[in-house]
Image 1: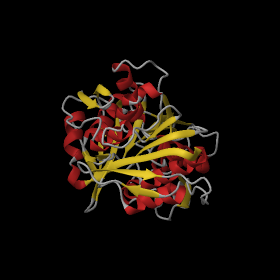
Image 2 (image 1 turned 45 degrees about the vertical axis):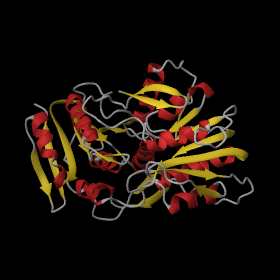
Image 3 (image 1 turned 30 degrees about the vertical axis):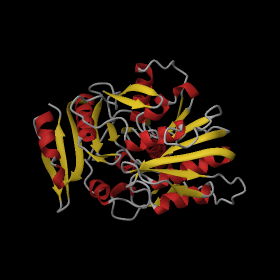
Length: 385
C-alpha cells in the first residue's frame, strides 16, 4: 500500500489482491494529470463537479477515491478493479454508497454532466462504452480522457470524435496525455457494433461450426486465437457428471466445447471481466440451450469456489495486467485452482513455451506433464494429490 498525494488530499491505495512483493502502484501519471486538470492546479479553471460525475475505466479506484466528495459513479469491467475500489474507499473513510459502482454490463446513467475516461487497453471496449454513454451526454457535459502516451493513438481520438464530438489532446506530461472532447448532441452516430458473433471453423473439436458471441474488450473477439485453437484440439476426455471449470473463460468457447463433449458435465465459467462472462453465457446458451447445467461467475479466479468441488479446470491464463507484463494473475489462477480441485482432479493449462508454467505447476502441485506441444505453445496437465 502506498500514499497517493493529490490536490484533493492524500489517500492510501492498493491494488487487489494485495501482494507485498508487487511493486506496481494503484495509480499512474495519467491519473495524477487528470486529477490536476479537474482541480485546476495546472492553470486551467477547475471543472464544476456539482452535477453527475461518471468515471469510466478507473483501474483501481484512485480517481473515484480522490473525487469521493462529489459522489461519482464508477463504471468498470474489472471485478478485481471494483474490489480494489471498494477497499480503497473504505480505508480512506468514504461511507458506503457515496460512490456508485457499476459494471460495463449495467444500464448506464441517464444524464452525465462530467465524463472522466481512463482510456482502456481495448479500443473495442472504449468504442462500446462511448456508444452506451453517448445518449446521457449533453452539450454542456465536460468530457476529459486520460492515458499514457502509449495508450492514446489517432484511432482513440477518432472514436471520441465519431461518437461524442470534436476532440483534441493536451501536451504530454510525464509520458501522460489528456483528451478533451466537446460533445455534439446533433452528431449522427452509427449503431453500436458490439457484441459481435462469428461462426467457428471446422477442425476445432466439438465446437466446430458453432456460433461464438463476443462483447467488446474480449481477447481475440473477432477470431479464434491460436492458443485456444490448440487447447480445443486436445481437450481432456471426460464422462459422467463431472464438474468442469473454464477459468479465465473469455468468450466461453473452451467450456462450451467441454460441455458438448460430455453432456452430463456441469460447467463453471469464471472470469474477472464482466464482458467476458456475459460473452461466455451467450456462447454456451447458443450451443446447449437454456436447460444445460452451468454457472457463470465474475470473480477472483477460483477463490470463491468450494474447496474440492471440481474435477477438471481448463485454463488459458493471461500474462498482462493492463500494460504490465506479470505472472501474478497466472499464479493466482493456479493456486485457487488447486484449492478448488478434488484429490485426483486435474488442471490443464495452455501457454506460450517461454512463460515456463511447468516450473510453477511443479512447485505448486508437485507434478506437471506435457500433454502436447508445438513450436509456440505447450499444453500442461497437473494433478491434485
